[in-house]
Image (cartoon, helix red, strand yellow):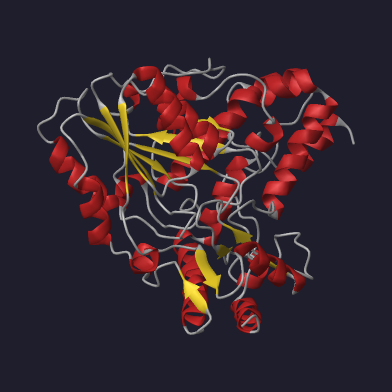
Length: 430
């Protein structure tokens, strides 16, 4: 395949004038063709869930309920990765020159369109963990200030905060938001968290959906309550609401304006179905000045978020294909995606809750839960539950916490019939 044919075949970013400004002329100088599909062009008929399911090259002799852990690349993402990989392999220097900035800009625009935010307020990272480390080590926090997080947050949040506060000298505290996760309520959560906010609290670090229990926090209510606390504070004293959103991104139909946070950190290779090794940090324009970059950026445009994107050489074929994941969710319909996942999660929770030998640890109320469903089976350790389900060709996971629970996560690759099969097999483990 010659280079002209290759560029036509890839169906990537050369077509859109907005993407290819500066690139098309360079391609023409070298005999290349800037013809291709722009972001947002339709993937195909995705009006049926069977059509969506067919995008995933998953082994069909298993039921896959572990998509929360690491996504299978759907067809448009997989094809974009391969196209970029072939371009880089065929002519690395030329392809980098032609694609680099325009491809990254396309990803940022796609992310902004999905989040309902300006692309200039989004930084690109390789994972949630990287984003959390960059954010918490980059925030300006004085020794006399205080950081509040929760006992339910993931190791990456706790460890990032611990090492950052050891350097700054600021205090770090943990609050428990609920005693029984399955019965957690929004009012209980907000009251517990806001009751621990002090006059010198500079950061409130939370996780939108807890991967340990499946509890979804009422982030908007927390943001509104913090706004009242911050009303008479100066900008340098304002309590910043920082959210790990990895288990909500790709599930919840919420814009950044709806959320009300100051920062959102999320990997994109889970529910969003993006390429492995991709992530974002979004910041409100008023909050970005509080964050200092840790790693020099190669893509600075003068906006604080662009300075926050780490430089160096990355898996560019994966990063540049991320726009297709955002586009896919837009093409399917964000509201449809959210409703589909919530329907199957509710079906799963209701079925588990009816079993005498099962203890459900995720709230059944959709307002305090998302796609994760955590549970225990009497008399079986959690690893044993996962192993027994795997024997039945059902892929589940465990929570990396103490106490540990078995975990199921219905996603777009699943069906209601598959949920019923899982419930039947869990019932048989009595």
